Length: 164
Image (cartoon, rainbow, N blue to C red; front, side, top):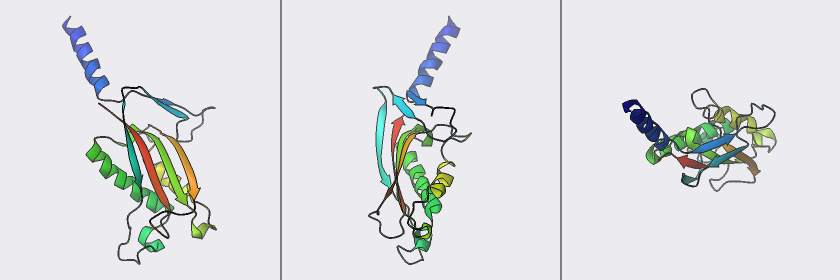
């Protein structure tokens, strides 16, 4: 009897510390690090996190210059670091992200095409890793520009399923 009560209490505690999320893999055993779809139960708390843009990587450089912000990979890493700080305050982490939208401006050094490869180098340090295997549903878009001005190449927004 004591063992079954202990098991029930453990199961109740364990279920209350994680959100009820089902991640559906991409078809054909794809290894691309996103989910085809992510499902949450109605009692899951969702956080719709506003988009974040990069801060300067070289504040001494001319504001708005490429040196000020860096390339797409550098900017994406900067944005993920900023999310990391925000997530700590919200009591969540990257494993709780269920949806991501990525807005990228064409890189002038790449004939105006978005640097998806640079973004992916940063993204794969945070999602689909051995330490953090959860993958969100995700969309990525090339856009004409961001409110931050020239040479700001990326903005990311996320939806998070918060553990109770």
